[in-house]
Length: 250
Image 1 (spheres, rainbow, N blue to C red):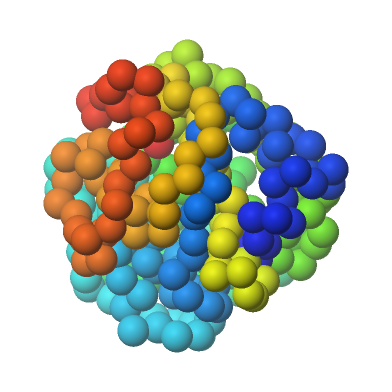
Image 2: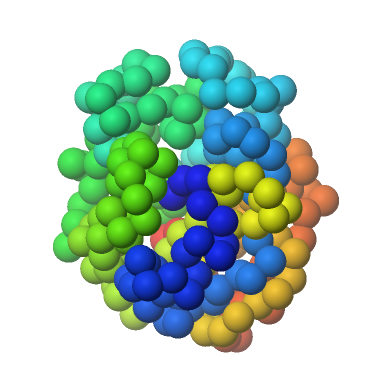
């Protein structure tokens, strides 16, 4: 999701579904983006580095290791579902409400084009078909960038509630996070994790996108990339042990 601070979302009557989701899982009360604007935050979460990008420019091409290339090398699968992407593997910078700046995998030459799919390919109701790790990127309205909080909340309730429920009984994990806030407040953002292995509650440890990346990497036993190697991964949120790398999906 896009461009809202923790206080804009958590406790807000404009986001009833998101707040209900927070009560079901682990709410990170001290989660932060790493910079402004959007694009370098997406790169940080995906590759452990902003790759030197300081704006929302397009296109870029990188050959650096990233979450997808690591997972694929370890014989796991990766996929991304972007609302409004014209076709699978498209490298277009923008199309209607789709923006490539929010789809960092497209920038990496070591990620198969087939991993980047339109959201219409998301297997709603048949979540066992999801890749081992998947990203879901709403369009510029539904991610709250261009439209108000209620629009994004309603989109999540419509499209992600089924998966959130499924994750709680299928050793799976939903991570809901924002790229950055709208400025100020130390770039604090909402981050919520829901799944079978998650112990519901509020958690106040300092976390950034690098820590979220490190958490996913540790779940699947792949090397920690860039700044993720020095970030605090999430450990206190699990009931007993984190989801099994061989069976869980993030």
